[in-house]
Image (cartoon, rainbow, N blue to C red; front, side, top):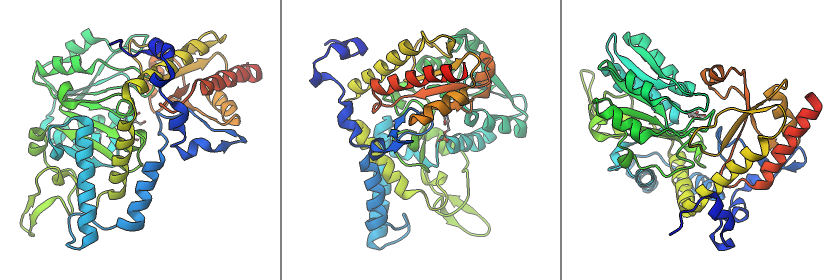
Length: 421
Ligand code: PLP
């Protein structure tokens, strides 16, 4: 069978193409106007839009099913508990985890990382120990480790990258000394779109007995993730970037590690028994889910995963690859435009600067045309420093974006040059 890539996709008969017009109908917000123009939403790395099925799942839950979980014996509470646990099993299948007890519901990637830093980290990191992160991390992936190192007397080590935005793997190997307690790297960079060779990186760390946590916030919306095939020890992602609601995210952890780790927060639901003298904690995953969870949002995330998995994934990925190719080729010849990040493997994201024009001005001109771009340091100041720029304009794509939308972006960049250049 011919593998599907951008070229075969373009040559393919219509039936073998990703039907963008059809999927766009599923996203009510894509039908609206912004500043009198059809919305062109190119800020998917910040948050993605939601299909109608997700919105309806939230509406149905609050209209007909709302109750607290794990505590009532009444009909609605039992229904809500069943739905919440069904959502957990859905996420388990989505990530190909071995068991649903390895799936912890959290608020998002940031909370998942803080959970690992405060439980696994605090129980393992001693003075002089090290945590290895990469030069392209989001602050969610830097600050919790810095806080941990400050509290425990540990040290943060950083894997450098080259001018294309690829990590230097020789340097990475050199950093893995016996003091390293954890490697915490991003699967896909939010600032550059670089897709890191995480499977190889995990194998190298494991050969030295070092566990690995992957930040999947920018990977889960675009690629199939198999935590068992990757053999990562922890994996995180955010519901709101994966076509689901805000307020819900996932921490996957291998059961053996989660069982050993102390709890994160104390409260209801994470206990088996409690007296004033002593508390016995609940087994995983409940041990890490203190208090009333985001029940509706977990159910909304299940609907988002259902939606995503009903799409033809190879066609969807080929469509996103084609959007990236088109954007890269159409933007590159613009005089004074410099692309930031040209990694070997990228997801659908372009970051660029225009000579003498601030990224915010590009964003403002685009916004007048109803185009949503991100302009700034994208919560990645160390990445901006590495490339010697204060900020970039970033367009990040999802499967519902079109060639025409990229053409609109290119026209807006030309206009910004005319006005400010
Ligand atoms: N990691 C990466 C790579 C991200 O892009 C983001 C958000 O932009 C985060 C972590 C934080 O995600 P959240 O704000 O959903 O917790």
